[in-house]
Length: 366
Image 1 (tube, rainbow, N blue to C red):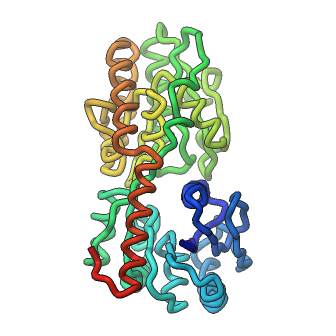
Image 2 (cartoon, rainbow, N blue to C red; image 1 turned 135 degrees about the vertical axis):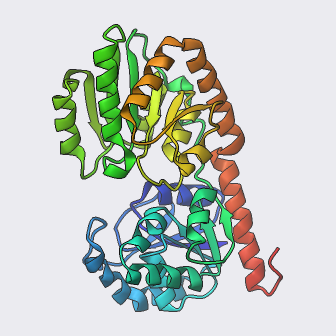
Image 3 (cartoon, one colour; image 1 turned 180 degrees about the horizontal axis):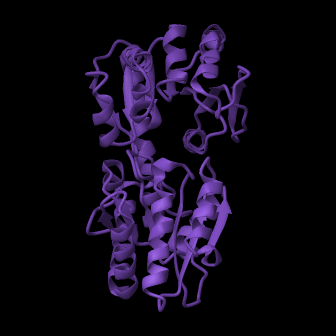
């Protein structure tokens, strides 16, 4: 089977998709507006003169590349075309007139993009309408996307490599209480509430040897550093910047508690899945995408979003209840193995690709 992704070649998620299908012996091509390399794949880079951080106005240049995209896809002649991200690559695929393709929605294209203006909403509706199949990483995101289409979504959650993300990566032997997160440093992920909550714990429970570790990059990086300093926890906070998947696995495994406390909508809590795979207990906010990625009360504690005091209380509670932390961690690891193991998730996607192939040959959709 020859597979073509229309997607950013430098994305960690696309690298994961490509790695799996290459390992299965498939021929994989990526048509991308960002340059990148993935072992075993052929990347067809189209320089639109726009980077991933550009505003929507500049990204309209993507639409001018529709003809080139159509030509490249025609030359590849793939058995399966999977377009990722509804409102950039998805819109280009629709304008290019590509036939028989799958569209995978990612998150901000559903939760943020259509709320910007009536034009943004129309572009999303157009993109969803033109796709033959629709994939979503969570039911929560599919429910949101169904505000803009009545089509069926196949749920294809992000799986994690449970050999990479494993409690065996733990190397710490000190008595510190290490908590943290691995997320983008932007307002939607609620890192500011985590910083404030840790400051409250540090102030109200000086007996707790708490240490905070934050990995990630984003527009709020400097603002969050200033906040930590103003809150008096600069000396117990470590800023790791952007880290690799391998480093992320080590970080989660060496934390005593993971906090994934998004302040707004989140498509799926892949960070929560990674932390649970490492047998790290997690605290999440009451965001549907995060609650779908954990088993509330069994693998995670749920705290109302945007409530630093409640988050601080949950952190202190788990510090004093080591048995509860251990139970959450063990349950989390088992939950991920049963529900989000990397190979099982991609086996489902692989089966869905087979369904699309049968449809192209004139078979009825199962």
